[in-house]
Length: 249
Image 1 (cartoon, one colour):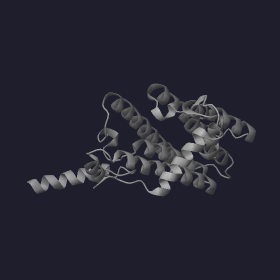
Image 2 (cartoon, rainbow, N blue to C red):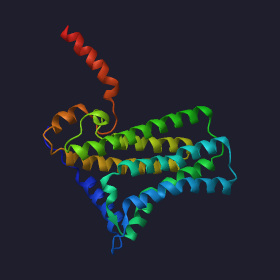
Image 3 (cartoon, helix red, strand yellow):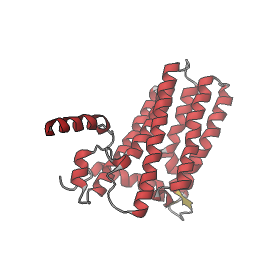
Image 4 (cartoon, rainbow, N blue to C red):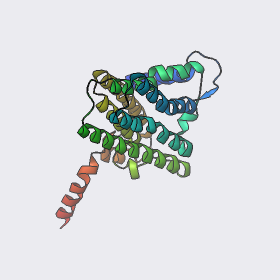
């Protein structure tokens, strides 16, 4: 397997979004992207509380949702303060910050509103599934970002072990699970539009990343035994190992 070439449309979308969220409107770049994102994460808790007060919805399920989506932002902040992704150090214009909200993160605020205004509260079973998916997603995202930060800090190169053993994008996998939990809880068609929109952009970033890391000599072997997103070999690997032992015996 040779070097992977990022599809042209994916590359153009990635470059366009990068331009709009960093340089739109021109002028000085006074803001770090981390500040833009972190404000969104920190403010979400209070925004959801405000929605609950406005709608007079203080049901048990509303508090559960607040504990998930509202506190997720503070999990993110702990991660950011401990091992920030280098890309968030990029400086952006005020127009770029605005476009970050209009194109990317602002849409996530639809989830709590649509959840709090749903006609019937979610079942206990749905709450369980959402909490389970959300917890798993946060674990994947934070563990992967932690490994990425410290491994690249002390040893540059292609990451093929740990969280990256079976999927090349465990952090994106975790984030998708997190927003999947919110979409399930909201139970509205519009939340699925937002979810698919967000997941599609994550996928564009995965395609661009594959094009970048395919320059490493280990790429061919790594790509053959890993997936772009779903860590499906977590399930199949034990069976493959069992079959191999049987063949050797």
